[in-house]
Amino acid sequence: MKIDTPPQLINSTQEEVYNFLMDMNNFKELFPEEKIEKWDATSESCSSKVKNMGTIELKRVASTPNSLIYLDSFGKTPFKFTLNLFIIEFENNKCLAHLEFDGEINPFMKMMLEKPLTSFFNKLVLKLSEKYA
Image (cartoon, rainbow, N blue to C red; front, side, top):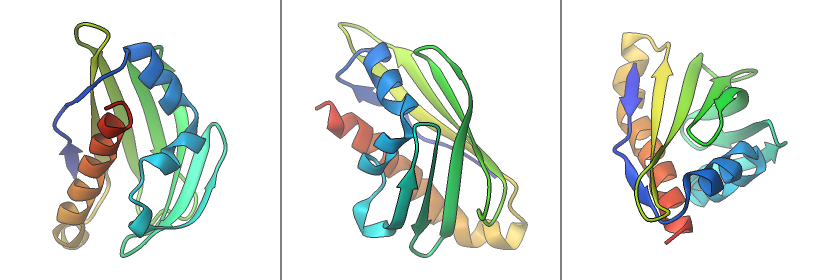
């Protein structure tokens, strides 16, 4: 299953947004507070219990300076997935950001998870843009 969020305009430079996202401790600011339990993070990984979705554990596995951060699921996550964070230079010290999720989800789980996951990832990008509003 693939989910690609619409790009959000961020009122900050590509480099500043990239540096913020490179420290996975900062992801707590992006996750919807009402959905998160048991948050734990380091600069390179994070884990949390997400209400109605189970435990999600992410680790940074690669990056391209100022433009892409590649995350991979690990640990107790109920299915394998990757999450790519794209940061695209725009104009006047602004950038665009969007997420691309690719998960190994069976058809039954896809029916149950596609809508809440799409909403969850859209909120992450929206909260990133609100952070720099």
